[in-house]
Length: 409
Image (tube, rainbow, N blue to C red; front, top):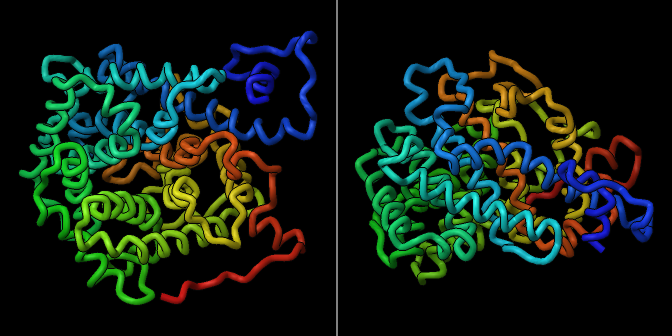
């Protein structure tokens, strides 16, 4: 069924309708159109980055916009790591006989080659040096991507490339993180080392968990290290997704701090409910806090909750798909957010004032975190179900709507 619909779609401009193709049940088409559009959009954003790294041309060809001197030292790592972080679960599905499965095989091959170039000190696109503090952020995001694609990416890298990656991860230990959510970057790197080598710096692994569990996330407080997190999206962009993936590794290895995972996943579920509710009937969301230029990356936790099957019971996965699809169509159905294939700084168009101090062209690719649900099989309820009104759409249409519900810890 999926292959037939791909054949009838404009899938990447390569496949065209044919009168000779057997008709597909009309009511099934909208179900698959959403996933096709997501994969189209993923390719539209990710391919220029991955393909240029694979060809050793990223530094040469990527358009770089920044207001910060020296951004060229880390912007290329940002672009590559953030693309990989977001598409890793999709790659992890692996190849199959479908059109999408064959496309995944292509992207797995491209990604493997790109990683080999990126960690090779002799290549033009060697980007894993840690000359600046910022590199800690994106090496951690790259490491998180490796955890998310262990079978298809990590295990298919040559031993030489694996060794280089482990060296790069260990080299970040010279970077002292800020005493805030940056602690999670060191923890993520150590969790990845633990997963792939069986060894890590236990203090660097555990310190961030202790800070969030014992100090910053006390009781009903879910906003991190200070009031600023109550008015921006960093709980969703970084904090919850990293806590979840770190704690999964800790629990796997029987570490006592892994016991925090159950409460943490409940908190992520609660945050995902709030994120779903802030998507307006038109598919927009509040422009508050820092890093609005990450665009749909602000829904990282909602996307991860769908991937991990921890959405609240009162939220149907299909309504999350419908809401996020509307957001994606607003942002990427046209070309207003691109120039020559590269993302522009802004929310919906080129909006230079959103280029904050730590934002550059590479930063923008954190928007790829919205694609995590593509790691779910096409027959998963998230994908295989009719489109459904999301909470704000139900409410403003006058339809039955459940109240927002807290979690009793």
